[in-house]
Length: 230
Image (cartoon, rainbow, N blue to C red; front, side, top):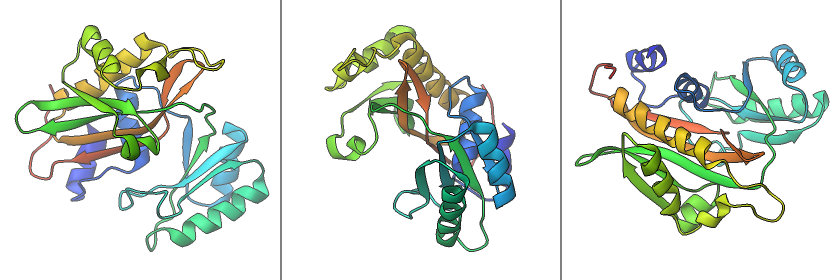
């Protein structure tokens, strides 16, 4: 895959959020609408195309934890707020870097996590669980070796303690389990097809109108292999 080949040629082992989502999209995984921008004029154009409210994120392969660096601004509702947020984000970016993602604001209080880890014994394993801040606090996650079948993916969902989050809760419709199962299958297929992918972290994976959508993503690569496809 060209995105991964380019990163490896540049000596990088981490894809930017934008690059990671390009990989996910290539495998049919739904991702948030977003546009890359590098100046205020491009930001204005992107915001006009996406529509307020928007989210701004500093985008760099050199920054894995954007929240801790103060590189995310949410619920931006007009051009004045956007320009101010942009200046704040750029001031916190690594020197010389100005890439900012303009994203649609995805409503939805349920946050899940999906991903992949490459185990030395079992190979690529798909991960699923509670996302957002609860990933580290509750550690409610489960794993299955890839590739996954539909049954594997359904069982993976049922393996977490908080599986009722997928049901209809407080007026929110139930998560489309079939759509979520297909997403987990596709995540696993990336690990099967592309040996250079060491880790995938899709967090948060939000639920909008019952459908899962990747809001943020991280892909870590192995340094010492050439690109191969299954």
